[in-house]
Amino acid sequence: MSLCVLQSILTPIGSFLLVEYQDTLIALCAAEDLPSLLQKLPDCNGYLYENSPLLLSAQTQLSEYFHGSRHYFDLPLSPQGSPFQKSVCNNFR
Image (tube, rainbow, N blue to C red; front, side):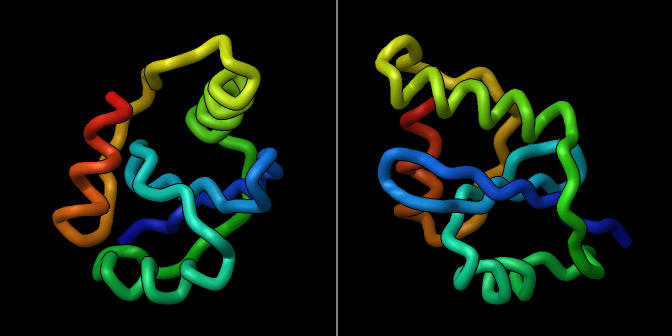
């Protein structure tokens, strides 16, 4: 079993959590969505807040995106959610 690693970020559109699981970014979600996300990950036995290299890179890339200097993301993704939500995430690759 593994832990999810979380990092809080503030963006121009609000506060979010970046969620890493097994060395991939699985979600950018509101804090209130975290419990339902964790229920969908049977091998995740909890979470911790930490500044991992992946989450720091994600935060940097999101900042660049909101400042207009980035149009694509270069991150290992494993999006969770409905088929529609996954298709939206895949459009950012």
